[in-house]
Amino acid sequence: MEGLWYTELQEPGVAISLETKTRLHAEQTDFQYLEVLDTKAYGRVLVLDGAIQTTVNDEFVYHEMITLVALNTHPNPENVLVVGGGDGGAIREIVKHPKVKKATLVEIDPAVINASKKYLPEISAGLNDPKAEVRIEDGIKHIADSKGKYDIIIVDSTDPVGPAVGLFEKTFYQGIFDALKDDGIFVAQTESPYLTAHLIKGVYKDVHSVFPITKLYLAYIPSYPGGMWSFTLGSKKYDPEAVDLKSIPETKTRYYTPQIHKAAFVLPVFVQELLKEALK
Amino acid sequence: MEGLWYTELQEPGVAISLETKTRLHAEQTDFQYLEVLDTKAYGRVLVLDGAIQTTVNDEFVYHEMITLVALNTHPNPENVLVVGGGDGGAIREIVKHPKVKKATLVEIDPAVINASKKYLPEISAGLNDPKAEVRIEDGIKHIADSKGKYDIIIVDSTDPVGPAVGLFEKTFYQGIFDALKDDGIFVAQTESPYLTAHLIKGVYKDVHSVFPITKLYLAYIPSYPGGMWSFTLGSKKYDPEAVDLKSIPETKTRYYTPQIHKAAFVLPVFVQELLKEALK
Image (cartoon, rainbow over all chains, first blue to last red):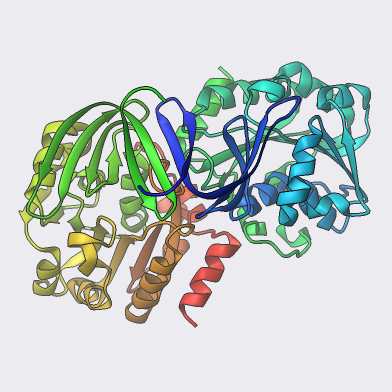
């Protein structure tokens, strides 16, 4: 293989390498090591602590799927919070939704926002929307200080190492429950069922012990380990699988459709078994 | 990264690397370079011309999905042909189906069968089933010599390079149409919508010009490039999406379910658009 390659060790024994035209930025922030690469296959890529976070070419899948399932399950998602997600992609999707009045981003690391604004304008554009408020704050503290405030809370975190460890703990999920209104919905990215089954089981069990409705759904994300990515949704009242598909507002998407909304909850046998084991 | 790593250049600019305990076998066959690796993350892996074909840990997805969708769409799949697929995984799924009377494997390269029998017994076990017939033959010639013979034909090929090039051509699809009975169904693996969109468009257009019903469906295969894998199905009579799910026989699976059968045809927007472009 000629040329310059960036290699991510994704899980023990598996690595992905992307041919890289140039590294546009590299910086040790107060929280993590941040890089922006320009790659041949995926365009510009944001990397934190050696893990690919988002790529210009496939980010639409992750950002549509982490936001639209909850937004289109809730009948009136006016006030939405994103914890993490400093690249701005989740906020971009949220502010597009016709019913959203306010989208708050709470990101602990301002360097992620600054690098995304400079190098990933397609992804970070939503941060400048009048509906968006950006707060440089510890997500755990913000959640603890918020009571009955949000319709939807989205946890758009890095992997559960470094600054994100506390975002995968049961006390945090209880805090999210308390920060939501009485019919609120919570969604978190929860890694790969193929490669990090232990993590998914733990999160599912914890969210299930806090929320009356807990469901896992899936999306295909090619730049993430294994390509199959999971999201765990906790809901106080509304079942995301019971949504009337005709009620979903038409918006321009590249991945999500009302039919995908339902199909994403149809789980392969081995994933169903993993969730059953989690509740044993 | 310490240790010994096997790297596959999957598409321009993207490579996957698997940490490898040992290489169990390597051989230049009459058709391709064949290797069997023992890897840390995926167990034993069959590699042909540097491309991962199947792994013990995730092969169930590919082999269930390339066979069961057609088998459970056809009301009476008695006589089934697999072109390629010398590892035996597709045959293993086919002979399990209660309605199948005969499963014929036509593989051009006997070395693939021999290595699979020796090193991948979990995958190749079906080749010894009384319903299975193994023929060392050119698939293109076998198809040309068969008329109105099969209920289902599955093309379980390598990537469209080397010996498999002819298995991605329109004249071959016309031959398959002629080799099927009047209500026959055809399925082929057709690579990744993220990374090989051009190939999928060409196949879809060609199959669509030959078969009255042409559909694409998807499955998550972590060891394949991008993780999202496509299968193209051509059918003379039965619509795979119109199947009565209650008619599907209960079998032990690890990925496929009747609900997955339907959900696999629900395509993200960008894949729908790719198919529309193919027919322009």
